[in-house]
Amino acid sequence: MNTNKTDIFQRLKRVTFEDFKQMALDNTLSTHEKIGFPDSYRQDYTKAIVEDISRKIPAFAERQKTILDIGCGCDELAINIIKYCEKQQHRLILIDSNEMLSLLPNYEFVEKYPCKFPENDTFISRYRDSVNGILVYSVLQHIILEANLFSFIDKALELLKAGGTLLLGDIPNISKRKRFFSSPSGIKTHQNFTGTDEIPQIKFLNIEHEKIDDAIVFAILQRYRSFGFETYLVPQHTTLPMATRREDIVIVKPQ
Ligand SMILES: C[S@@+](CC[C@H](N)C(=O)[O-])C[C@H]1O[C@@H](n2cnc3c(N)ncnc32)[C@H](O)[C@@H]1O
Figure (tube, rainbow, N blue to C red):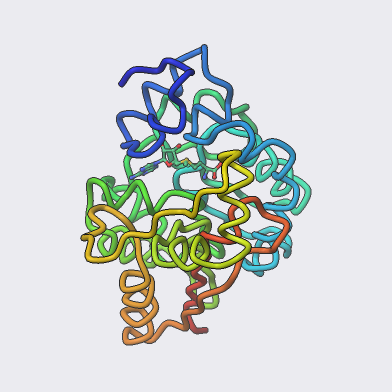
């Protein structure tokens, strides 16, 4: 992958686990860019994101729980999650590539597990039914590029303790994006961003390959309800930068 800074938006359109490893090693990139975000999408937002997460994963705000962050990256968000878990005396397990994890500090209460989830049966048998809160933040859109989304979520749910919560956070939903850019405030946002008075092009009769849409979001909600979990589609707090086109799914394992 070409890591020239000039075409950041183009480059960040389709990023796989292997691409992320290369980005983690590229010292010309900021930590926001290493995890696939232009600086403007993450700078100064981390505190609000952690607050939003702590409202959605109850165990996060409790004490002495086991928290797992799958696809934690190496950015301020991961650092703030580490700090938050230290304050709450949690045990924190971080999963990502070795290249990403080695950019994060080491602590006794943090276990780093380098792997491409869920390709590690030893990890899954070790932590089955034992995790109170699982965070998968801004990761699903990359999983869909090279794996089966449902297998990924199935395996994550195997790790949850009864009463525990899985947050599939910051999911870019192409259907939600289309609705937003058809609305007056979406049109205004587009015009401010491009510095033009053009109307955003919304394409229908267009197969959205490798994108998450309403059909996939609702299928996730329905699949795990049918297995006995509670599932909820929840908005992001309006202070978050992508709240108009991203949303979160909360899945709770009954007690
Ligand atoms: C967009 S970044 C998000 C990082 C972090 N969650 C955040 O929001 O700041 C996606 C991260 O997921 C990781 N990732 C992608 N696929 C993964 C997989 N199958 N298992 C573990 N990590 C994965 C990437 O290496 C990358 O660090």
